[in-house]
Structures are given as structure tokens and as C-alpha cells.
Image (tube, rainbow over all chains, first blue to last red; front, side):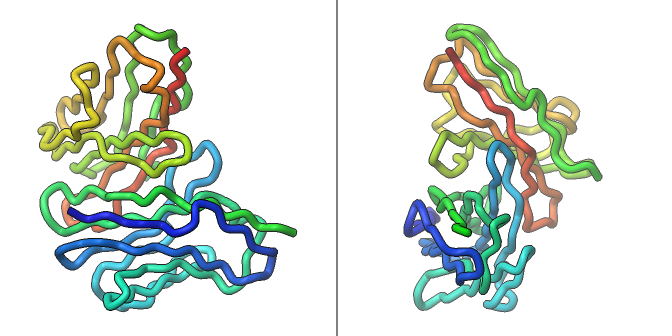
Length: 114
Length: 113
């Protein structure tokens, strides 16, 4: 069975600083990996996805993530944080069998300080 | 394409009452998922439809929960005899046959008092 672990339930950065949100996965088969963002009282919006093509994936709002098989990681980064980036971020894994449902991590709340 | 639509967005109900949530997936998406999300947690898979067939149910889906997708279009999730532990956001999502991306709705918040 696949799973993801998000290290750090809360991350606080200053506006303009680097954002790094960590995600490690566990999967017995090659995974597909996703990052979703959730703003308060809203559903989930896809930021980016890794589907076995390029290991460095660029997403919306300036975010990117790098798939590192050797480290079983898929960390999310953004060079310069904006106030509008404050939200909850979820890493998710999916294997290409059966229902293809996502398994989510417990989330990381990003706080951006002015 | 208006995205995945869920109704109602918020529901407050008394313990023991029944509630029903509706989900309208993106048109032509034949795969539909229900998830539950409690405060401070990631979404947890509840159930999955391919067209009108319910192909998988999580152990989280107790006997008080029932989901349907008549005609393979919209779906409903009913909770009978609600309990306080059912308080959560219920998320619906959909994708097409070939798609890698699952698109989520805005969610339906349930508060059981």
C-alpha cells in the first residue's frame, strides 16, 4: 500500500523567503505524486503533478517540485513566498492500478509573515 | 466546464437526523470519488464509482453511509442517524478514463450538534 508523510504540520516563512514543504512517499510500484493546495473553507486545487516524465515539475503560482526516487521524496518549493501563498498544502500519492484514488498526507499549513 | 459542484456547502444537523449531499462531477468524467476530511487532517478516501457502479468502499464507510450514482452522472452521499463524529467536510472529486488528475469540488461541511 502507498502512503505519504509530510514533515512539519506548520511552516512559517517571511514574505520573499524560500518556501520548502517536505513530502516523502512509500510505494511498492512507481507512483504518481501530486501537490494540492487548500484555502480556508474551500476544496483542493491541484498545484502540480509528477507522472513519470520529467523529475522536476513546475506548477501554478510559481511552485515546483522535484521527484527523487533515491530519497523517496517529492518536496515542494517556491523561491519567494507571497502573502497569498498562506494555505494548507497536501501531498498525495497514487498508483496506477484499480481505482487510482489518491492517498493524502496530513498536510502542512504554510504561514507567510509580512 | 464548471468544475465539480457540491451542494449544500454547509449543513448543520441535530444528532440522529439524516443528511444527504449531492455532487455533480465535471461533465463526461465517468470516475467519481468521495472523500472525508476532518480538521487538521488530509482527505480520506470513502468510496469510488465508475459510471453508475460503486466499485470500492472504504472501511470508513459505515453502514449508516450510503452513496449512489444513478445513471452515472451526479452522485449522492447519505448519512443516516448522524453522530457528532460525522462532523467533517465531505469532498467529491472526478476524473475521466484517461486522466491522471482528480479534480475536487469545494466540499460540503457537515456539523452535527
